[in-house]
Image 1 (cartoon, one colour):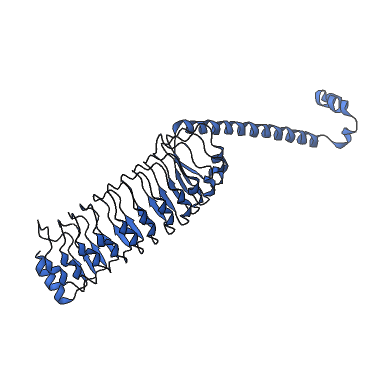
Image 2: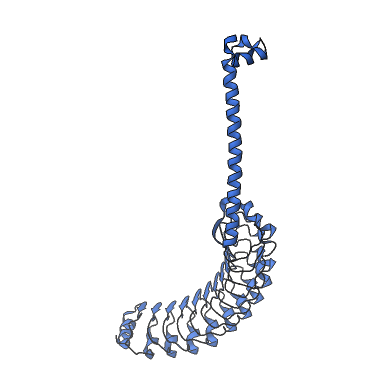
Length: 367
């Protein structure tokens, strides 16, 4: 496809949508400068091509609100990229980007930003200018830290940080009061911020496959949390916070492959817990807290030793139940026989006394 011809045709017709996903000429690595003529285009899809760079004339796309550039070979973005101030949805995943231009913070209307599967080692501090941003995906990069200014993204509801090299999260995370989903599995995080209690709308937290040493008590004040994954922290995580029972909305909890040996007393207050995963976790004692939750908990996976322990207790309970039932049946039959025999004996003979009744049974000829 001759891109220059398509651009001229699109510009002349006043089209608002340009769809070029995977349609560019083989080996084409640059767009023609004439792309700046598309001043009426609001949506553009240039994904799944082999683009290595964008022309500076892209600034001419003033009406652009949605731009999809995923699965190209972009190394950088032009300085003028920050002038696309009407952008709302930007997809840059699966490129070769390592940095963003200094003007990127001008894109204050962005609500969706996908930077996943690139080569970022850090994000610019100007990311904090994106006050309208609701969803940010930076998974599968080489991020070692997040800028403190991330706390200024006050509209952020979804933050995906999986598969990076993060060792910690900034305390400013606690400013993200709209945050509902936070995932950061496969990192190197040792501890969570003490400001987690401010995340009053948080519903899902995944910190599996990290080096988490403990969970702060402050997390237990994020009382809307429904799904919590603390699994696969292996030798590092040895206890749950004492006040975990505050998470009354919690429905799913995963502590698989941790070193937790006992559950806190407050665990029994997790009345909405439906899924509990604890396979390969060395719980030493039968968790009374789980028993108090009743049959509502779905033990999707549990370590074999503890599973056998539960089975033995179940068998013991059934055996005890059978003994009780047997005793009740015997007592019932005894009472039944007594009542039946009482009906067979005429009332007038009862007046003759016990010995007459006794002899009448064994010596019927004496009647």
